[in-house]
Amino acid sequence: MEERMRILLCEDDENLGMLLREYLQAKGFNADLFADGESGYKAFLKGKYDICVLDVMMPKKDGYAVAQEIRNVNSEVPIIFLTAKSLKDDILEGFKIGADDYITKPFSMEELVLRIEAILRRVKGKKGKEVTMYKIGRFTFDTQKQVLMIDDKVTKLTTKESELLSLLCAHVNTILERNYALKTIWIDDNYFNARSMDVYITKLRKHLKDDPSIEIINIHGKGYKLIAPDVEAQN
Image (cartoon, rainbow, N blue to C red):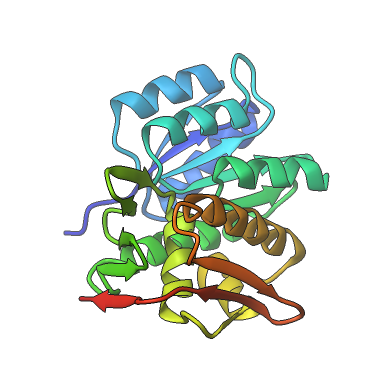
């Protein structure tokens, strides 16, 4: 029997939290509910979760603080934010921390489940199907361990950074279409996901700056191009 996926659910609205937990459990997940960020983060450190669903406005620690602390110890676990806010700056802040998705209240519980399932399919689908190693100029990129190495320097990438760099490597020296990348990694090519991808492109440029022969350029109206010599893929 397949093991049920474990969800860390942090929501300070007691009624909504209980409804979400019951619905998620009815859909086949194991959902642990916490009413504040501090207790949620402590639970994350003790348990093994497949995905985190975090309300932004919570007592003791807000969702951004919890996500940042989670990212400091685990760069891979997917994170979805729940929030009543719809301001662009708030949403971009969440993506900068490393969120995988962002749902604005009110939302349907069915939509939340569909987004959770899409993210988990993407994470699970990476295993065994992609190139495991790229040589990019002086860098070595391990797609499974999600690390970028040059000389003695090792950089741990987030899941989104790793997925985006993998796509760029697969299209090296050709255009990676913007909409294709958005639909492949973010599922939806809406405004907020597009801005999120811009943030991750900026992060990748910083990670790759130690080799001046490598560049990620914008192709106006189309997408991005990874310019790099001597790119070699290994299965």
